[in-house]
Length: 355
Image 1 (tube, rainbow, N blue to C red):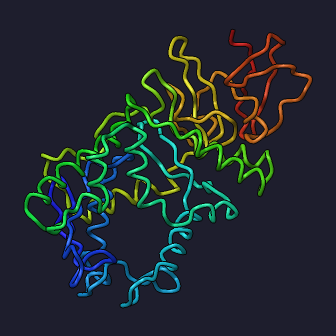
Image 2: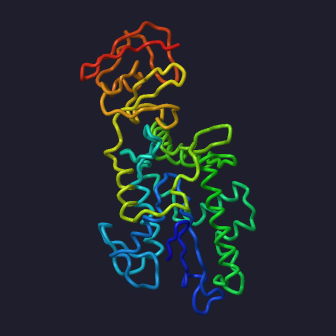
Image 3: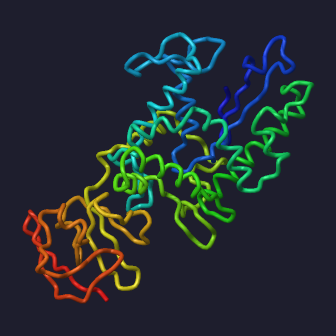
């Protein structure tokens, strides 16, 4: 494996279709460092892990078997069945992500999916995802063939012409797909997959829980350019810049995904009136990163809000009684009389009609 400022290059010398006695002796693979949706240089972080103990011992295989507590590895290859099990362990530990006030992706403390949904993934997604998305984005089949083994000619994947061509094609396809997810135009539509997930969740968890879990899966924002993450490309460091050390990248990633960084409250801010509405993190149907202007806050007093979300009010320190007759949800409001809500720390909010 060789890591450069633009890509990770690997040479596969022994697989099911390459190696001594096979038609193809070896084949080169490439991963663009611009292929990042979060801005974290995960390619460099992964390369750093494989390049230091206990993973950097000499061997004729790539994926190693993990120890029972997943804290290290054994000097033995991981079987296909173990790889599927490892995938499911990772899926079971994924958390819902959100954007903070600085538009950085942060990992929250809420599980992305229940255990009953983990078995929906069979282990084939990793190798099928990129070609499937390329096809959905209408990338030519001639270029898509380089994403797998279909582009390797009979002379062997190590030929100079093939390596040079495949590097350019593979990197460009990866970056086109990443750009489409970040900015749209063209856009990737995942509604069919989300419907399949929601059906499975409804069967195993019930309709209410299914709707709650689906909020974490719906990260693409509808726009004129099509569904996208609403961010610029590339998110990762530009190729011409000097790459930081692996240690610095690991520390940066650790800070980014630290659950402690998730503030308990956030404020939505109206662009025209600057009206500030307080929400509890994951406390209602409004997702912070889908709102135009937001601020993260650690206390109710710090929020300096003009009103409080009715759905979140019960979780902040008390329920707004029916006698107030007021509504302050982010999606709608009523014309009834204002009422007061006093949270646990004594800070008062008035639930008002903002129309």
